[in-house]
Image 1: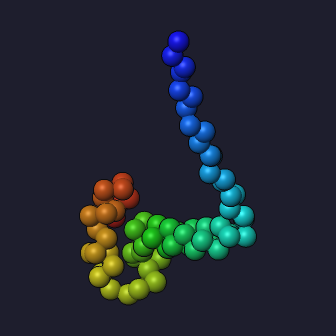
Image 2: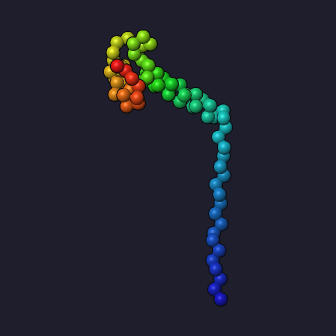
Image 3: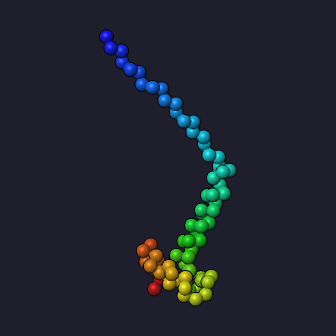
Length: 72
């Protein structure tokens, strides 16, 4: 009578949770970065412009239209 071969026991890797103290600075950095990008793409022109001139508007012009922000 043949004996079935038992599958080898596999050890499950221990999953170490990441603490909020570790994630918080990165989450704040990414949040500020995204808000800055959203400002420059969506609002940096005209009366709310932080940077004078048309350079920022021209660099981000196609991105504004792609994301649905009006700029004309």
